[in-house]
Image (cartoon, rainbow, N blue to C red; front, top):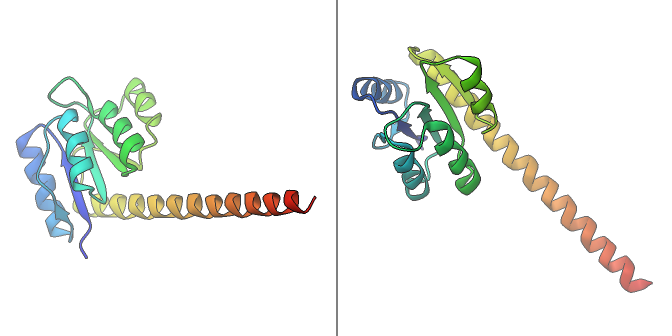
Length: 150
């Protein structure tokens, strides 16, 4: 099954180029989104495997604010695609715990490896969290049983 990728990019030519690259390397590109507000709505509705998010977007909400909401509400991994690499933007972006940060322009190989690493890291993180949750539940049950015996 092809991985489903949501592209959030307000520059049409760049968005179409990314969409073409995604198809060339074997991913399904969902309909392109142009604003942070629309990205949050589409993330909840479409539940993509990954979101490629520009930082500077049309609308009131930039890509960093949108990524933060997407992480908090939907737990979908985000990779930033941006032309900006200044320290202030990177510091703001880090807080959202992105699964990658690519400087435009980039090639298909870099895009492919970044996507694969991000999806793998996200799945690994989810497995670890589920394992920790199971361990906590087992400890809670053991504690409850030992308290009943007392």
